[in-house]
Amino acid sequence: MTSGIDSTEGTEGTQGTQGAESTEGAEGAEGADRLGGIAGAVVRRTVLLLAGTLASVALTAFTAGTSDATVSAGSASDDPAPADSDSSPGYRMRTDARFAPPGAFVPSAAVTYDGTGLVPPAAWIEVSQRSEERGRTTVALRVTGLKAGHAYGVHVHRDPCGAEPAAAGGHYQHRPSTDPAAANPENEVWLDFTADDRGEGGASARHDWNFRRGEAASVVLHAEPGGAGARLACFTVPFGWAG
Image 1 (tube, helix red, strand yellow):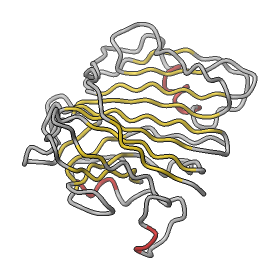
Image 2: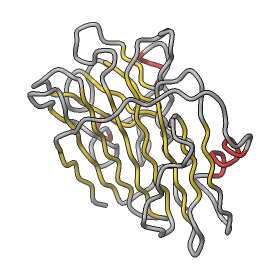
Image 3: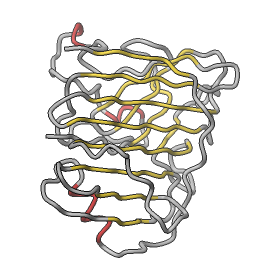
Image 4: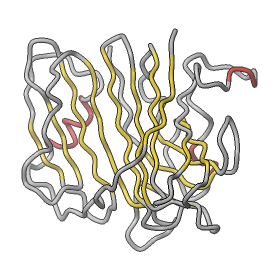
């Protein structure tokens, strides 16, 4: 098993935009249910615009010998997001949002619980995933609008975000264990980084394993690097699986 964490400098993103209504009916929901375990020569290109959210997501699943299937949500465009040029079997996802406090008038998939300015409202986050069928998974993070010079801990968690920080559950683990020693970058997905002088940052983590179906659902930003630290913010992410 191999793994790695590569820190990178973040770049400015654009705010996930709000949609008004579905442009192609119920196909969006059906397409989203099929991503992650798609198996057949089905080609689906759907745009789903979700009202009242501050997030956008582009999901792509590939199956050998077929064209791509794509769902894009939260975009103001009528055209789906471009698919990954690599059509090898696997799962590709990219999603971004602006942080908002719990109970905000316009809800967001990215929730900040912080009152200290470490993750202020309107800070931006993007998470992407690239998984090969029965093989390597890479998760990448980019952020803007955070506190310059601060070191953050970031991990993939098991459950979606909620009004309280604890809603995201514990860290996703490749080999689940109650042993504290199992909380490490090889068995979990760690994306720790230090924000630069513009409040931007990023990281990526690579593992020779895939997520289990339905067991990874969010990314949590912690007040300090490492395996613990206060939960400052949370981003619900549609992690997928391949094979």
